[in-house]
Image (cartoon, rainbow, N blue to C red; front, side, top):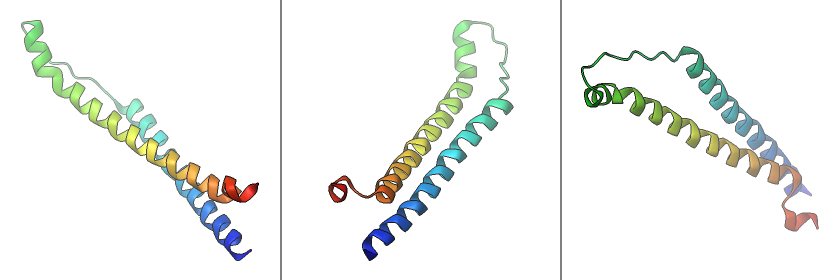
Length: 93
């Protein structure tokens, strides 16, 4: 009985933590969407334009990768919290 109370408490804490992580990711993504501005520098040829402006693409890809990893971590924490809150499938039945 005491183990169930502890697992429900830890599960609720993990649910709150997971929701906070997922909420932070969505807030960060929305803020980045609202504040993103592209400053493309003019170039003489296509190759030079790609070379000069590739830093914009690399920076954007790094940010998207960070958000994807943070979202995956938040969803794992949230799912573990739900599992603990409801009780493991082996314990339910």
